[in-house]
Amino acid sequence: MGFTFELLSDEDEHVCNMFGVMKMKNMYGKKVRGVERSTFVIDASGVMRREWRGVKVPGHAREVLDYVASI
Image 1 (cartoon, rainbow, N blue to C red):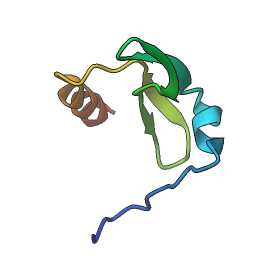
Image 2: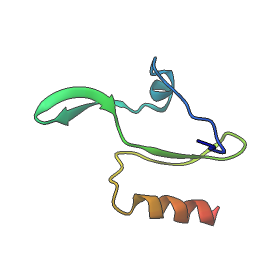
Image 3: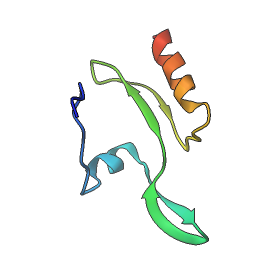
Image 4: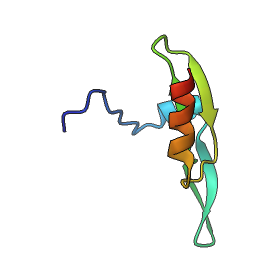
């Protein structure tokens, strides 16, 4: 696709567990295990600068872009 970054496949949930995003969720009234929608800003040195947990989509991209522009 020509992305300028690498994509990650996390079949064994190693990275999900590192970030603590695997949660029990409700889906159509059933408890299911899944990924909590989260965003992490990690700088070029590998330092996590900010995180958002339990993200709701409306307005979130703008909030993240505004934060990144401010650092």
